[in-house]
Amino acid sequence: MDNLWLRPRQTIEHILSTRPRHLVLPLAILGSIAGYYGLLVSGGAAGLLADWRSWLGFVLLSAVIGIVWLYLSALILSWIGRLLGGDASTLELRAVVAWSAVPSILGFFRPSADPCRAEQRERGHARRLLRSWSSDSDFGRSSFSC
Picture: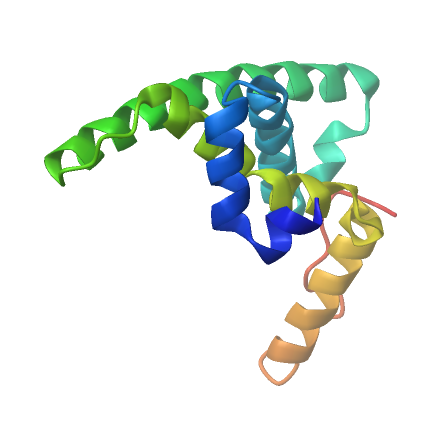
C-alpha cells in the first residue's frame, strides 16, 4: 500500500501489467459508497441514513451507480484518449478509475468520517464565518442530531 502513495505511477503500471482486474469491482463499489456518503455528510443530510433500511438502500444504490460509472467513465476516457492519440484499453482504464478511488475509500474509514464530528465541524466553520452576518444561534442546524 505504501507504493500506492509514494510511487502511484509505478504501482498502477504494475497492476495493469500483472492483474488489471484485481479488486476493480470492489474498489468501484466502495469508492462510490464513500463518495456519496461524503456528499451526504457535507450536505448535512447524513441523518437520512439513521435507519438500517436506509443504509441498505444507500449501499445497494451506490454499488449499482459505482459499477455503472466504472464502465461508463472507462468508455468515455477511452474515446477521449483515442482522440488524443492514446491506446489504453477500457480494461486498463477501468483499473485506473477503480484504483483512483482508494484515497476516498480510506477517507471513509478514518475516524473523522463520523457524521456527528463532520457536521459539528462544519457547523463550527459556518458559524465562525458568518458570525458577523447573523445573530441566529441556530445557524447551521440540520435535522441530523448527534
